[in-house]
Length: 624
Image (cartoon, rainbow, N blue to C red; front, side, top):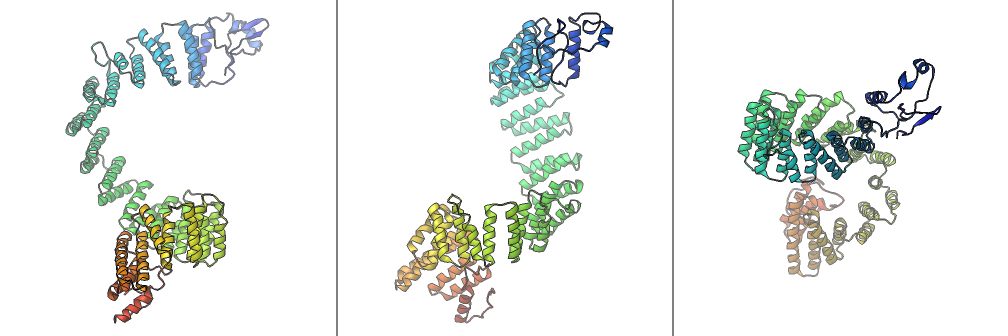
């Protein structure tokens, strides 16, 4: 704060010297304040009442500024208020203006200032009270009336708003009043009044767009789209090539769902402004939204050609090319930018994704390696590298990469990944020990038990895998994956088949469109039928086999084709005695992505059936 005291020296009060204890940046305001002080009460003869020689020869300490000076005119308090307001001290400014208003109660200016300060201090009631006083004192001051109208609008006091913004005949005072009243009418959905006000606004300011655009908005909200378009077109005759009007026209087409009309507007603008960046962007976006991919590619190609430094458009064009399967074109676009900015992390990452999808793993690896350690997507790039190393069965290098990430960015996902790679490399004990070390009795144990179940299963320990998944269900009885895992595991063993059916049905209730759970249910029915055949209960067994077939066919549709599901269908057909049907499904399974760990007998069954049916035998692991 500024000290507000008087300092005495030699028995005389030094009341005319202003010495602030904090620095205020408005030097001109201080100069004005000093001039006011010098002209209103200091002794004559020299500065501060001293003879000129005394002033030059003697050094005095300047006294502090006294803010409250009842003897001074209101102008003094106004200057103090303006200084405080410039510093952002609105409370101090308010107090100064209040003192000035006491001294000059008929000043509309002071009450208007107090109203605006009250509004800044979020005292709406105080702002209205002061603004009403200003209005009473200066009823013809448009600025006062507009501000009071703004306050009434905030309070949703529409009668007060009309009182201050309309004349005696009920017409808006001026264009700004008409615009404020129009906005309120629009908010209240009084479209008839809004249309009248927009028309008046257009008449009040014929060289401006506010009335014209307001009228178009009213027509749009009335769903009179032709009238709205005609209004904007009329505006274009008066304001040719005005971008705002063209954008409003395009928006009208968009609101009506007419993408072709919207695109036509953009092309109309581009005819007179070829290469305009903003319009080309809007055109490309509209083409994308209307599924005109070829058109969008052409537009973004034009943007990239004209604005080669626009990285976002280059990335977007590369994404479009990628989506159309043009991997080399997409990669070439990104590489052309990377030649200029070789270490751009996002572009390098995108290039890696394109190369990986195209099956070019070495070049994908090279692209991901370009993402530097300080980049936000560095960890994601390193995980992509891990996945590529795993795809090339370079598990030791993949594990080394994961271990480095665990040091720099430790998290549970990386722990799980490290454990899986350790088990893949044959160090089952170490991988399991890592997972078990994470168990702490918290809710997070559920995920650890699930990962343990997966790892035990992958390492050939089905008993421990089953126990881990049952622990998952103990913590979360509705866990879909664990329900399916336990149910399917029992079915594989031919154990607890009724309970297995119950678990898998519960999983399907939670996730009814899951093709792999549907396959599990079909497999349970197959195993039930197999048991009944062993008991010579053929009719019951055939009924269950039909249920198995129905569910497995559903699973084929849901998964889009899966080797395990096709093998299961072959097993169903074989148990029914249909060897030809079984062979067809086994051959179909062999032509899909075979999972050796889950299908260890597929090719043996396939060769055996081929021999039984006199078909030529293929090599192990080969599709017919």
